[in-house]
Amino acid sequence: MKLVIVTAVEEFQNDVLKLFKKANIENFSSSEIDGYKNGSSVLMTSSWFAGQKSGNESSLFFSFTEEENIDTLFDVITEFNSNLETNNPIKVVVVPIERCI
Image (cartoon, rainbow, N blue to C red; front, side):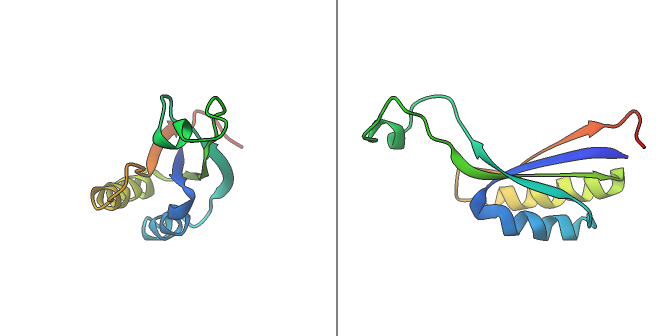
């Protein structure tokens, strides 16, 4: 069993749910988060409060699942990201679990 963590901008939330389904990951948790990138952007410099940083509304998903499901998830996310027209790909990482109850 491993822990898989996925982050995506809010507009891809439904896509992530579909990708989880394709990977046979039925049990997972999610949370709304703010995503940040270092560096200045056009949005930040044109803001009334240019010194104030604001994050992008994003989602974080995680699941404790089997390795074969994670392999499938990586495949479908790689395919999804290859067709993106934005600079906000879905990110995914895997963390091994040493012990669990």
